[in-house]
Image (cartoon, rainbow, N blue to C red; front, side):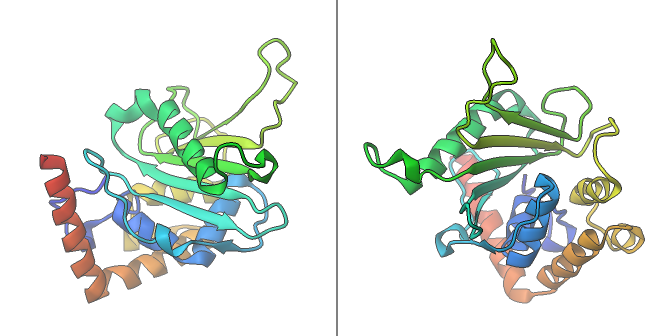
Length: 228
């Protein structure tokens, strides 16, 4: 959520505008995705068309697509979600983003074999499933035989900054805490090199006058969208 009463200096990484700008850095995007998935990602590219903030009517989110150029040509969608009232709609939202990615790759009736392995990732500032976990990963499996995977290569991941279960390592904990506490003091004491690298980019963005002007325009557009 981007709070229009904030200045750019007051934004946390959980604010959509700042998150999107940070994730436009390909190296940071690559490392964040690799950390979330727990796998090495060689390279990430972000299409120019995805660099523009998406502000649908009634929404306060920005989504970011990042396409890896590894041998499997995996596609990712990463989104910050801070609106607790969207909790009940998250599964449907994940389905929508997955279908949007797929339809951008092939048209109806074309070769379905061209569909890419996909990940839809939500970083939530609330617990979407109330189980205390920091991370929830969903794949399509057979109800009668849970060990049988559908094999459609579509995965949905929900991260929770409010998790309490011991299910992630310290670097992930630092990253999730930093999402809502994007401050110099926290970054300085964080053990995570990833958090320090992200904070360096955050500082550059916040000190950039052009970015401040862009954020002011974004906040105004968002406010007008919400008021419609």
